[in-house]
Image (cartoon, rainbow, N blue to C red; front, side, top):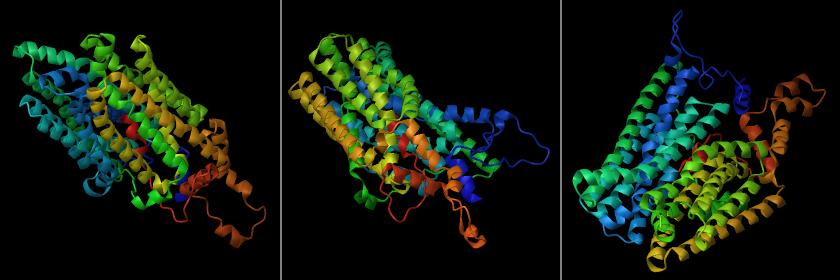
Length: 524
């Protein structure tokens, strides 16, 4: 019976009106309004609103330096190398914390306390960052970005854990899409409003300078306080749901074992290479893009901020749509190849032409969204389930290591050689990612081509490994003793049969767990 329930959960079946498949424990004869009933969709929609705003402050403040690049460099008398250190200091702690965030939520703090603690880190980090600007102490600003980074990535893990705990099946796909859109909204609002905030503060203070910059960044910290309030509200809702529904605490399900690294396949290492060399040509470019557009295209600061935010503006609505297309068509490697080629074309247009950058940036926004939808799910096809936590944690860790190192390199290149050499450098990074995609295609082809199967082929395979297909493979005549030994296949067994047909390497001993890390970096 337990295995049958596991199968229903794997296939997305079950009572849609129940909360994670559990019945509500109510007193006899007592009814509860829909908006107060944790098992009802209306109540969960209310929870979803707070869930989406949980990371709004983090994503809003992450690109504060990019939105105020000219103000930061002028008011604090910084060169580009020093400016890009603000992004490097955010990434350094996450080289390690990507492995520890889920563990801290599962084993140390719990989802509710963990979310509040990580939200506090984000708030405190932004306040320290703003105080450093207010006092004209750049080392204090770097410390603030380091503290901010400690909370930022782990808060995304907590956000995904809440989503998995409150939603399931097809609802979960929509929830992750909405969270991704809200993350992009936070980045977009930051890019387009912080320049105006700085101008208004300068008028109120009477002049521009580091004091005005510090006050502007302190105002931005208000969004982090708002997200902290959302964390407190979510903790209340989750505690209440635990009492009413008699459910267990939500967990990330991550099982991090560094010894699993030695079992990673060639396909997985190629996916890591694509991830690192693609994203280092996106986030560092956006981080210093404002001055690039001002210097090359003679844009005003407001125009430069607007064009620099177009990647996030497009990504907000495009990510759910492109994710739906990838789900329906399959062919993940083909979509990744298309995204990398489009990104290379966008950077070449920015480097070697004076065409309106709206074309290149729009193309960059679409290709960036497409790659996120096609690349990250492939990890689940090439590693067994018990290694997902390690694989996604390692992928996120080396991504942050790459971002930290390249942020420093970008600053040095701009100061010494200028933006043309920088764009050539970005094109070179994309070319390395492109070669890794081609290599991945051939490696996967030699193993059966599972990563690039169509959605119809994958659906056929899933149907063959489904519980309904089991009786067809059983012998027609069995003795009573043999029949007693024919136990139904568990959900974990079904998934591993599917992965083995795709060519994934499955060790002899496997342990069951789930991982929310698959969705974390996409939200970045």
